[in-house]
Length: 150
Ligand SMILES: [Zn+2]
Image (cartoon, rainbow, N blue to C red; front, side, top):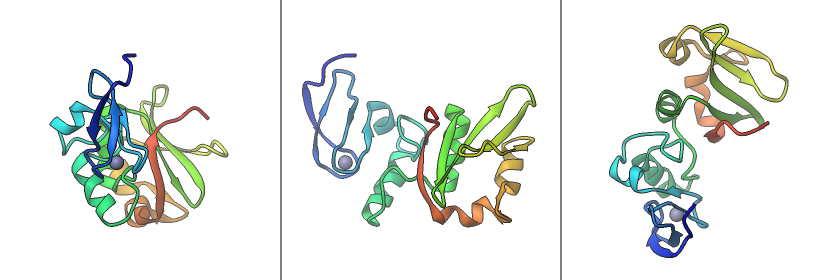
């Protein structure tokens, strides 16, 4: 890890932040994990943050967390990165590829309950929680992140 020794402005909120020699840093104001790569690819989700830079800026301007991804960015971050999670009704859910089943797993991290989907399109169209399509209730999601240690 190189030392954080340079200053830059946060790409999302404009605050002054510390960055390392490779351009990576973290904003104390909005939480954005800054990187050259996301700056170069503002429409790509899953680069150090789940939302793409463009949508993080939109979210922040709306007064929401810059780290909260919309459903499309969440799905794209899954495609690009592979293991992601979200929080809905205070419950954390992981989305990951299940090697044994060769399917996409949607797992309730708290109780381990897991549903399987054949592929990403199946997940997008059919993933349901509590009887509701995930895509329909996504506005109630309060956190999105890369899958954290449980
Ligand atoms: Zn910021």
